[in-house]
Each structure stands twice: as structure tokens, then as C-alpha cells.
Length: 281
Ligand SMILES: [Fe+2]
Image (cartoon, helix red, strand yellow):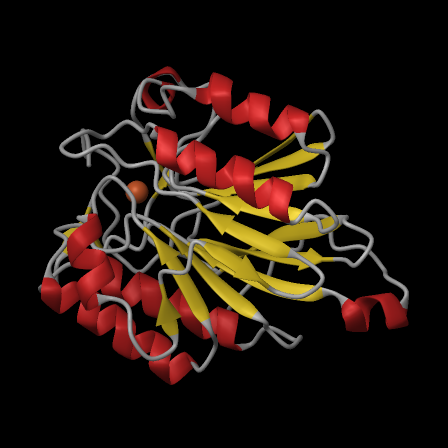
């Protein structure tokens, strides 16, 4: 496979500083299924996932952690979670996961975790801390942060006030200029953003769900949405549409000074078969 690597915001860095940085890969919205031959909008999601992970394996730097940010198994099947677990074991990097709207959290925690995969909610990486939030609502495509998730965020930012914190969840907490997708965003962004406002150690937020790259800054906090490992959605469009953009993943370098360098890497193309006429997913 020919792979075209796209670098965004990769900046030259002081070498000593670079060596102390933490490198995280975000892998999201894999939409695997019990049947490894299953296709979403004409695309074999297992093949697409494997292509993206193959690209990730060529990452030129030491990877400290992988974050899986939801919609990992489209049918929430035991087979799908176990196959994903096996792939991560062979990849060989510590991995933490959280659920998306297509997952069933109980099934995910039971069948995906084990070995290198954890469901740790507060990840102490030494110089940085990562907080993993569950934004899912049973039987809903939209997102909501329950009180216990908001309290966990507030408490973690308070407990680790001397460290920069990265927050991960599935649903987007800010609008992305796409009405159909914004209708299933986080439905209570107010308390979430208010907690970020009150804690200056909140440095970045990453999410899945939107199947596209999205980057902005909110009150000095990097807000980052990430492409799926399978199909992508058309950006800045109010109705559903599938894009021909290739799948990929996000890398993040968390620097000791609390800053984040980040970018997207994509494979050269989707596996064959994309059906652009698909009306939904
Ligand atoms: Fe998804």
C-alpha cells in the first residue's frame, strides 16, 4: 500500500524538550462489526482499521499511549470487541478506551478491556494527566455528561491542579458548522465548558463522533475532533454526506510546558467500494 502522510501543525521542536514530551495516538470510530467482512457505506471497516493501524505502526516516535474514543464496534458485539482487543495486543502499546453511541458501555468494558487495554478514567502520565469521560446516553445518538462525569472532571482538574490535563470524550462539546451532526452533539456543553473555564490546567479536549478533522481554540484550550478509521463525513454541510477523504488518526505531543502539538495522518485512500449515495449510517 502506498501511504501519503499528511502532517498538520508538526512544528520543529527543541530536542531535549521533545524527548520529555508524551506522544499519544487517538484512534476513533472504527465501527468494527461481528462479521469482519461487514461493510459500512461500501467500506470494509476491518480492512480500513487495519490500514490505519499499519500507518500508526510506522509512527517515527515512541508512542506512550493510545486512546480509543468510541464507536469502536458498530454492533457492540463480543466478537468485534475481542477482535479489536487482539489487534491492540499485537500492536503492543498501552491503550485506554471510552464508549461512543454505537457501543454498549457494559459490553465494551467487559469484552474490550484486558491485557494492554484499560478503561482507566484518570490516567496519570507523570507530567500530564488524561481524563476519560463517558458522554453516551442509552439508545441515543446524542451525548450528555451526567453529573458523575462532570464531578470526576472537576475533581481531577482540582486534584492535579499542578499538571496540564487532556480531556477525552466521544461527542463534540462545541458546534462544528454541520447541522445534522450538531443535532447529536453533547447536549449539555455549558457545565462542561464552565469547568474548563474555572481550571487553567485544562489544556486540550479530543473527541470522535464527527468523522472529520476539526481544530479550534476555546479560551486557550485546544479543541480537536478526529477522523474515523473508516468513512468520513462532508465538512461544513448541514445535511448528511459521505466524503472521499481517506481515514486516519490523530497524534498529539504533550509537552512539559503544558502546550500541545498535534496533527492528522491519513492513509492514501479508502479501501475500494465507497458508496457516496449512502443516506445514513
Ligand atoms: Fe462514529
